[in-house]
Amino acid sequence: MSSHVKRRLVLGGLMLVIIIVLTLINPVFLTMGNIQKMLQEAAQTGIVAIGFTLVMITAGIDMSIGAIIAITSMVSINFLTYTKLPVFAFVPVTLLVGVFAGLFNGFFITRFKLPEFIVTLATKGILSGLALVIAVKDSMGFVQNVYIQNDSYLWFGSQTFGGIYRTTIAFLLLGIATQFFLKNTKTGNNIYATGANPGAARLTGIDTDRVVVGVYMFSGLTASISAIFISSRMMTAMPELGLGSEMDVIASVVIGGTSFSGGYGDIWGTMMGAVFLALIKNGILKLGISPWVQPIVIGGLIVVTVIIDVWQKKLGEAIRTRARLRKIGPTAKAA
Image (tube, rainbow, N blue to C red):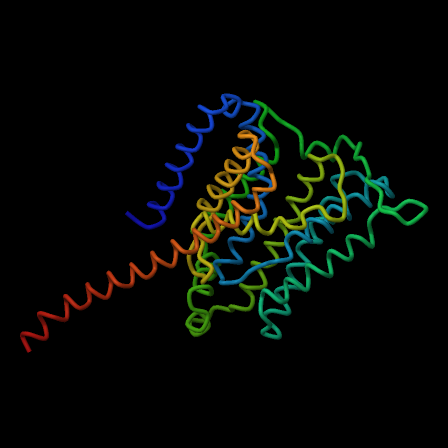
């Protein structure tokens, strides 16, 4: 049994235990309405986490995702406020905001060999400032909280057949498509190779710079997609929307089994991680615990998960070393 399968079984079993305990304490937890809301929450984080997973597989990190959500939502609000363009005409333009932000990150990381953390943190600062600059303001220059009344735009955050939110459906479709791409295409294999050993990947003819730029562009795209769904669900948007969401995204990806060191992970794990995180956050609220506890719990989960990953790697290396020594032993004796 592979480590991927073992991890998912453990995570699935833990989720089942938590669901049973929360249901016994608060029967409202297992109602259809609460489950739908929880899945919608998981989807909003999970859509961003799907793109972030590819970045982490290449051993990178993207701290600009929250700011991309903010700037994308502000661009959407400006289109809704100052133009009469139909939604289907301007939404693709807003998604390009994330793509170009990812291109900016990837270019500076690959062209100037700058640390991913520094580049994406700088991008976060730039985009956060731009979100404030282009925010809709009143005559005194104060940022206005614009109420979205466009039914076509609100469609993204509404429910569909069976009461399932469109955000959840988008999350599932995007996850399935990305998992297929990652596991069944040459580019997907190149992403894994780039993260596992970039030097060896270059020697085999893989354009690692192009791979890195591509995954950052995809990460920006998924952040922009999430921004559309979040602002539609909230029926408004402010310049700080999405800022601070990096912690939830990183937690979803790490809990799902993607390694910070690169070359390992997949989308199924990330999707489970996003649902697990939404389950924890929903459970905290249903138990009547202060929501201020959530960041503490999420940070703790990240630390514990990383410790477990390091321990598993050391254990695996020790087992492989013992196996090699056993093979060498009889050969040495015979000689």
